[in-house]
Amino acid sequence: SPPAQPRSRYSAGVMEYREMGYWQPDYVPGETDIIACFRVTPQEGVDPIEASAAVAGESSTATWTVVWTDRLTASEKYRAKCYRVDPVPNAPGSWFAFIAYDLDLFEPGSISNLAASIIGNVFGFKPLRALRLEDMRFPVAYVKTFQGPATGIVVERERLDKFGRPLLGATVKPKLGLSGRNYGRVVYEALKGGLDFTKDDENINSQPFMHWRDRFLYCMEAVNRAEAATGEIKGTYLNVTAATMEDMYERAEFAKELGSVIIMIDLVIGYTAIQSMAKWARRNDMILHLHRAGHSTYTRQKIHGVSFRVIAKWMRLAGVDHIHAGTVVGKLEGDPNTTRGYYDICREDYNPQQLEHGIFFDQHWASLNKLMPVASGGIHAGQMHQLLALLGEDVVLQFGGGTIGHPMGIAAGATANRVALEAMIFARNCGRDTLAEGQTILEDAARGCT
Ligand code: CAP
Ligand code: MG
Image (cartoon, rainbow, N blue to C red; front, top):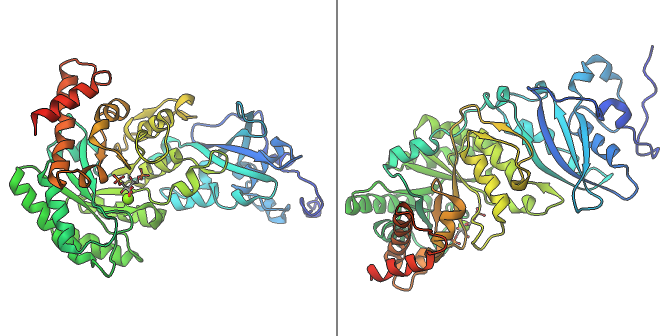
């Protein structure tokens, strides 16, 4: 029989996603389904189940009206299914909606394709006052279609020959304005003083005051001199972010030619560009550092946007090796529990559901390499005991202002960070409570190195 005449749900004031099969309370997600948890805040008077079913519809097969061509597809399979809607504790008006997606809705190995469905249209949908993507569960069958971090934590430590402590870095400051030569001097002082890495800032690319080739040359000269002076392997994250893929490849090739062990990109370059650079880094044995520049524009609000835990999962799939994941104690927002969740996503083989840390689903990483989290933003040596207790050992601690702002100079700032870290690790290995005795340990260490 011919299908019913297509109707407009909204012009007629009728909403019917739940009747169209996007609400299926009896559905049990299968092992190969992708699952998402959204925080849904419907407009006044909109039924939360209908709103959640609409999210399932708009992020999978539906448009605003019934279409004749639905009958030409396996529509029941391709329809996303909202199978649970729970009120958000202590937040009247918001609901957690759990939605299952058939694996065949997605192209293997493509974050851009995933994002175009899951966060494509649905965030601007009229019946919703706000919408936040809280978490996602990826089945092993899907995880295996991604390369994951090429270097990861274990191989990075082996290449650098540095074990048993966090790695130390610093972002060169001021963010903008230094000439190539002066920039290189900062890199040399910081590395010679005891840091493992220095880093370009997110907005350092190729400006009139410092062309990218100048920066790469001066930075690599500094790295080579610091390696010769200290006998350690050193690195500087050369930011290859640029306007086009061609420019980024050219910069990455030049970094490789100069012997750099690491390159850097910003999150704002986009998912396809990130995956392309990850592929390049894998082929060229380079560590790939991702600065999450821009993420707070959509991760910070608790009722709208995308949680950073989802971005961290996407980036582990995409295959970067380092990711900024928060400091808790620094200048940028981040509470200990949620940040712990981000770090677990980066560093564990398996994440069990842990609502306290914002982890809604069990996630198996199917042997994908681990992603090195990076703590950066307003931290300094005086917080070393807290950083170690909160963030653990497999992390890069980055002190930009906390190195380059040291009253006795850049090399002294770097040494202060290295001494503070080593004193803390030594104290911990001797069985001392570094959190309780942190201040004393730091003061003793500072006295010993003046
Ligand atoms: C750090 C930093 C980084 C932020 C970003 C800055 O400098 O270079 O961009 O840490 O952090 O410009 O603030 P300081 P995240 O060490 O001098 O603070 O990506 O974690 O949000
Ligand atoms: Mg910065």
